[in-house]
Length: 82
Image (cartoon, rainbow, N blue to C red; front, side, top):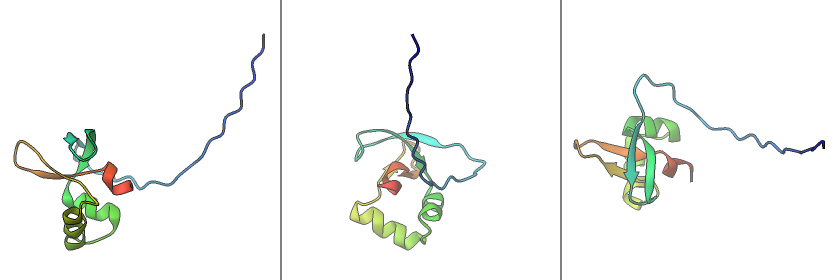
């Protein structure tokens, strides 16, 4: 019996950073799941804004900041694309 299936493929554009560093996965309380995180400079680069504008987005809750156990601050990558 031959089965024929049709697929619809939708392509979206997403900016990917080429970085020598490793993505850090961490639990984001706002997303309630484990996510990939970016450093502040990387997150600002993705959004094409400066550090002060990123700080404003974090303060308003539109972008999620995560404090890691080692004291570093990271940005939830998923919150950048919502």
